[in-house]
Structures are given as structure tokens and as C-alpha cells.
Image (cartoon, rainbow, N blue to C red; front, top):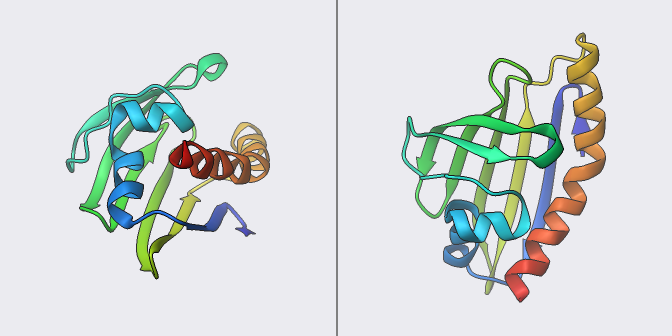
Length: 134
């Protein structure tokens, strides 16, 4: 689902929240489905995603509720967006909500990024689910 300047998706996963959390916060596991990184789920921690042709994107952890919620800035100074992950138990699995927001749609570069990421995030979450099943 998209709204102006905001991408919001939900994914039901057949894995418990603890495993989903690990795939969001462990650098090696996160790199399996998204990008190499040096994340540490501690508020104020600065880290980078190596996005290949788009370069290393700086990030900062904004909020952490271990096992339940993670939020970080993404590409401050260029995109100036925020990515948040919310985990909720769902039977034996997890309901994962991802929100990527803060896109300035008046900026051509940011609008193009929003349009691309609106199309790309569903595939990234499918890869996330597939890598967890490996």
C-alpha cells in the first residue's frame, strides 16, 4: 500500500518474532536478503547499507523495542526518509509491517526514488521471507 510520500506493507511470515527480529538486526542475516551493512540495534547507532550502484547509504537507529519495533533514518541528506519495522505475533508466526516514509514528492530525485521503491519493496520482502525459509 502506498500513500503520498509513504510506503506501507504487511507480510505474514511463518517464523516466530525472534527469528524475524534476527533477520532485521543481525548484519550477516540482513545482508542475505537486502544489503551489506553494519547495523546494531541501539538508539543513536550510525551505520550504512552498501546499496551497490546507489552507494553506501548512511542510517541512524531512531527507536528500538527489542523483538517488536525498529526504526532508522535512511539516507539523511539525500532521501531523508525513515524505515520502520513492527513485529506482532501471529499464531505460530509473525505479522511484519514495514513503513518507509518521509519522501519529498516535490523533489524529482526523491519522487523517482519513491516510485522505484514502491515497486521494489514488495520484491525485497518476498526475498526476506524466502531467505528466512532457507
